[in-house]
Amino acid sequence: MFKQFVVCLALLGCGFQAGAATAPADVLQLKDNASVTGKILAEKRDLVVVDVGYTVLIIPRGQIVKISRPTSAEPAAVVASLNPAILAPSSATIDAKAGYQTASTPPPVRDVRELVNLLGEGVVQVSTPGGLGSGFIINSDGFLITNFHVIEGETQISVEVYLVKNGQLERKTYKNVQIIAINKFNDMALLKIADKDAPHFSRVLLGDSETLSVGEPVFAIGSPLGLERTVTQGIVSTKTRELQGELYLQTTAQINPGNSGGPLFNMRGEVVGITNMKISFGEGLGFAIPINAVKYFLDHRDAFAYSNDNPSNPYRYLEPPKRIQQADAVNK
Image (cartoon, rainbow, N blue to C red; front, side, top):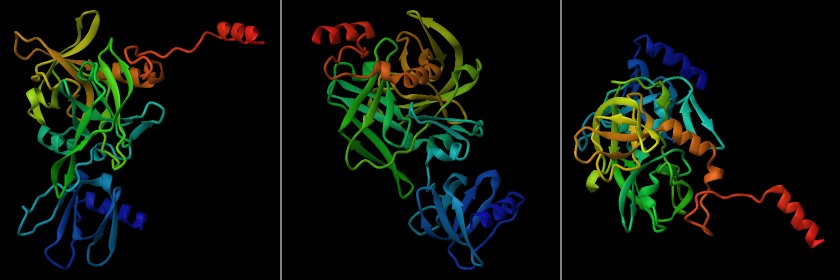
């Protein structure tokens, strides 16, 4: 059946459009401006089964851009899957140890409106008794990145995720959030949603801040001043703005309190930075931590592991080998 779909997909790429005999029909918009019209028989997390009249197609979820279900209650075009996995379904490279994904081949360039829909589930709001910030999910197990200053001094953390139901985003709050690793010097924190009823989450892809160009368009999603899911667009002003001894991405995308910890995306839907501060007496002077620094933090997260025994220290050191040997000798 999978081979049959591949053949049909090749035909669709040449302008062939399959159609079911019955109406009303569902329309699946695929990549490369192809589409399939038929009746959806089943939907799984990774595939959709469609009856096109003369046969049944099994279509990988990653090939689907949009599903339209014309009914009396809903408009004809409803985005049924906002899973960001469609940005790079078959070309995502998974770093199992670090727990994040990157695209081995560049995803297609899209406009902001489309990307905001595709990335809807991957951007979250992080709340503590002292305030709130933003964040983004890096894998389906509920690991997410935010700024250290968003959770600094806090242990009661909740995360609001916006899940897709019936083509709409619905808010779900998770209150069992663990601190996995922190780097207070570079203002980064790795958290994990540990609620028992937590589903597999949609994640965003991490890009490469080194390949960014000055003047390249970018956009941010976050909760500035508590206004959740606010989108701001701008360009990369510079890639190497030095502030307090660290290099930041400078952007004209508006950054305000509450954006902290949220993602800065390129036009391929990849995270290229963590928004974390602005110059308060100016406009269009926002800053983000380059995503390559974040990947270094994740690659070496054991060195930044959070310890409940000493929560103010982001590092957990092992005893030097010589001291261990001397202690064993004394004990003997």
